[in-house]
Amino acid sequence: MLEYIVEIEHVYKSFPGVKALDDVSFHLKSGEVLALLGENGAGKSTLMKVLSGIYTRDSGDITIFGEKIGVLTPKKAQELGVAIIHQELNMCAHLSIAENIFLGREKSHSGLLSNKEMNKQAKAILDRLNIDLDPETIVGDLTVSKQQMVEIAKALSTNAKILIMDEPTSALTSKEIDDLFGIIRKLRDEGCGIVYISHRLEELQYIVDRVTIMRDGRHITTMNFAETTMQEIIENMVGREIKEKFPKVVCERGKKILEIKNLNVGRLVRDISFDIYEGEIVGIAGLLGAGRTETTRAIFGVDPKESGEIILNGEPLTINKPMDAIKAGIVLAPEDRKKDGLCTKLSVRDNIALPNLDILCNALGVVNKGKEDEMVEDTISKLTIKLPNAEVDAISLSGGNQQKVVVGKWLARNSHVVIFDEPTRGIDVAAKVEIYNLMNDLKMQGIGVFFISSEMPEIMGISDRILVMCDGRITGELNIEDATQNLILEYATKFDSKVITSNAQ
Image (tube, rainbow, N blue to C red; front, side, top):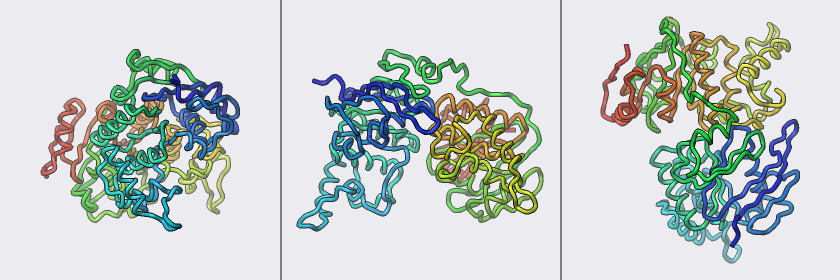
């Protein structure tokens, strides 16, 4: 019996100006979950794209199930049993579950498409995974977690024995994560080798057998998970000890910056009222569907409000569109950075300059090149954005560096309030600390900081005050000294409450 079903030896891969993989070796066993860890830009995704045939290696050897592979294409990788489930799901929303599972491999009978056969086989695969879904259901009608289950079913329909999962839990609730882990354990027990990429290190204890760590495009170490500690893992990932996971600064609370009064937008923003002061970071907690993101969209002018007031520094604002908010000094780093926060096909320079053209152009509308250079260089330097130069496309950056660009483009505007929606989703532990330090810097400058997070330790570790939402309403408000996980969860499930409970002064 083979010791390893995947053997990658001394692989190199370069892109213009970047050595992405530098003499990397990697091994995967049958019937194990191997966590592939590292900071953003460490080379994890690049290595997995080489294994799945998306990228062609520059040099090195790849052996799969004992067969030494020459040129590896996506089709060849699929034939060998390799399947990858990307962080951004690749589903055709208008097609059914069965049609998505067999897309490009449709079943036919006498030259005609056989929906009956595809539905039958799709149902068998779903049943194998204990997924209770009708194969004729349109994928666009499913939640993100159910779409992810369909992706796994699609991988198994190709007889995949090597399954790569890239940040699979980033958009899931706790219950959905438990369901996913059950499926992962089942596949592992059936002999599937699973590569699990995640920045949520607390998850590893529930499913992982071994850990491989990369840093700066190189393999650092591989360890049995049961024989290591979380501190060892983090130190190997970042190359240094991170003494403080949630750095915090203490500031005296100043004047009121932002006041939201009786804001209403549809079912998920109902009579929302709160204040933000200088020298504080306000976190907003709640379960999926509580209305947190919808509230920020209404404040920023993405969704038109039905009623309510937005008051900045004592002056009422009329915000009908995002540009109104931006010009007033209220800015948003959105949850989906690729879809809503970046122009991924434009350069980092263009992404930083684009929302700031009103302050970069002269009266004739001509961009002041010197001003632009200064703004771009200052942003890259302040946020330590890792990139070969400012002309590279934003899509080529790692997730953490993309997030820094999203945030950085607002820093030149003298903004009064910065709203972060899930600011650390999909980024590594060291990059998270840099984002927290940025939030602290803004706080010390007297800028109002308001952020949404689904991670309870993050909310409790960074916030000075916590608002809790449930079913479109604020159901609790807590000073950090009074906050506990149990109390936050109690407010987050207060579906019948119509009263704001406040412990903040």
